[in-house]
Image (cartoon, rainbow, N blue to C red; front, top):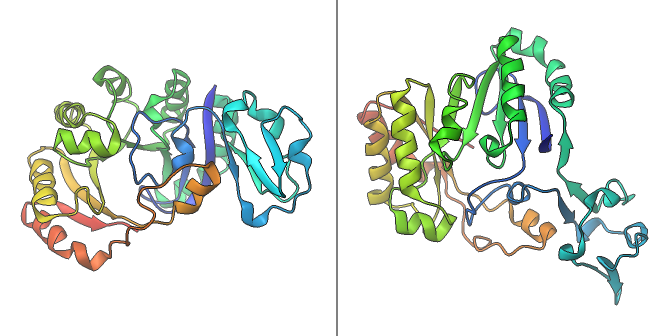
Length: 298
C-alpha cells in the first residue's frame, strides 16, 4: 500500500503540460518552513479547523478520550489516536479531517488514467511529490513500472536525502527529477532540517553521473539561505553539474501557518515576511551568467 494525502488532477505546475500530482506521506527531513506539514508523518494525520467547527459532537462519539470537549473547546489528544480510520468523514462540517489514506497501486492508477487524454494533448504526465515520494515502499516501483509501460512521463520532487541505493532504484523509471538543493553548509542544514547536507550533495553528484535529467530547485528561506553568499554558492555548485541545465528558485511564503494550527504544531516561520520575486532578480541573472536556465516559481 502507498500512503497518499492528495491527488491533484489537471495541474499545470511541476512539469510540462497537464499533470496529475500525487502527494505522498512521509519525509526524512523536518524543514522548519515546510509548506506541507501534513506530509511529514508517514501515517495519516488528524487536522482540525477551529474556524468551521459547529460542535456537532460526532467526533466525540468514539469515546476513547482522544477527542474531548472542555469549556466548549475541542481538545484533540493525538497521541491517544491509534486508529485514524474511525475519524474518516466523521465531521459533517469537515472541520476535522484525516489527511492521508492507504491506496493500492491499482487505485492510484485509476485516478491517473482519467487524465491520460490531457497528457497526450499537452505533453504532460504524472508528478510524484509529498513529502518525499521516494521514501515509499516497493509498491512505488510497481506504480512507476506501470507508468513506464504506458509511456507516461514521470517527474519526481525529491529532497535527495535518501540512501543512494534507494534513489538508484528509480533512476531508469523517472524521466525528470525536481531535486531540492537547500544549502551547502552541513551545520546550518542540520539545524533547520534535521538532515545531512553532505548526503544530498553526494547524491546530486551521483545522479549527475547517471546522465539523468534533473532540475535544481532552491527554496529561498529567510534566515536560512537568503543571502548573496549562500545562494551564489548554491548556484555555483549547480552550474558545476554536467546535467543541471536549469535552476528554479522558490521564494518563501507563510501560507502554511494555518496547516500547522490544524495539526496542533508550532510553526517557527509564522511571523517571517514573504520573499518577493523581485528580490531574486540578482540571483536569476547570476545563474544565467553561469549558463543555467533560471526561473522563479510561485
